[in-house]
Length: 186
Image (cartoon, rainbow, N blue to C red; front, side):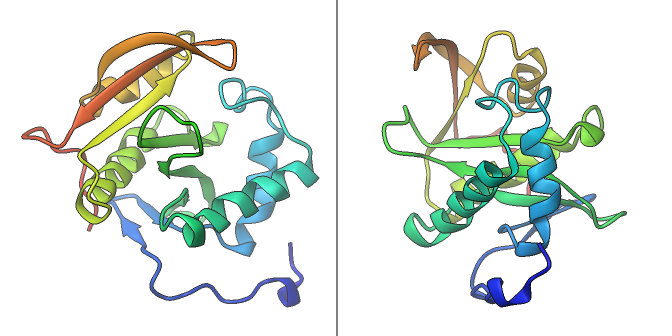
């Protein structure tokens, strides 16, 4: 998206988190092309509700951006500092009817296998505990999503129950704020 007339400046009061290799900030208009590619990738979306066309990806990024206003939190865009590339989204997430306060994550395939999911999720989890006052964070993960289950385990989560959500098998994992703090953000 290059039309700046559609891109008003967001409030400077929105948070930006920084880790050793990543910058996490609210979604911005310049993220849309990469966001849409990520949403269109069937493999990357396998456990995130399925691939989306570009118009649906537009609604998806707008939902994430709008949640910052409606809820005071939402997904951060994950930017690889070394390249400046948008590589995914991570952040506090609690849509209506959700089973708890979640920090969800999804990365573009070129970012898989580099530890970015753990690094970005840890920063967002720390922010949720420290700035939103959350005392627990859950993950709702498809049992077949082995990579995501490993990320949750690295972040200190434990399985609470197995259930279904909208007809799909789901493992609910949970962690509270305690001595094993997640990867922190500056």
